[in-house]
Image (cartoon, rainbow, N blue to C red; front, side, top):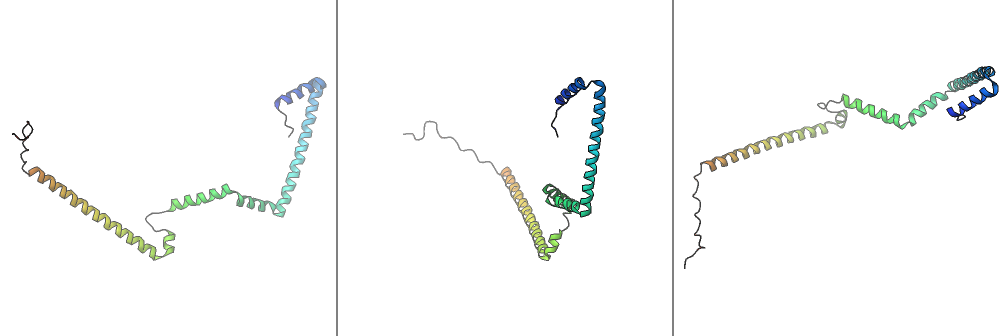
Length: 162
C-alpha cells in the first residue's frame, strides 16, 4: 500500500523512539494498533455488506458462472478429464458407440477386413513354408550331388606352343 520496506520502517521506529521517548512510544503504538483494528473492522463490515448485496441481486452467481465459462484452462481440464474417463472405460474387444450408431455397414466392413487379413496371414504362412521346403530341398540336393573335378589350370607358359 505505502510501499515501505524493512529499512524505512526501522528508520521511522528509531526516529519515533528518539523524538517521543520510550514511555510515549508504547502509548502511540497502542493507539496506532487500535486505530488499525478499527479501520480493518470497518473495511470487513463494508466488504461483507457489499457481498450480501451482491448475493441478494444474484450477481455473484452470474459472475462465477461467467468466469467458469470463460476460463480456458478449466475448460481444457474438463475435456481432458472426460477423455481420460472415456479411455479408462474403453474396451477394445467391444465395438464403440460410434460404430453402433453408424450402423451394420461398418460392422460388415470390419468383418470383411478381418477375414481378408486372416486370409492374407494364412497365404503368407503357406508361401513361407513352401519357400523353406524349397530351400531345404536345394540344400539337400547340393549336399548329395557329386562334386565335379576342378578344372585343370592351363600351362604356365602362356598357352599355344609354336
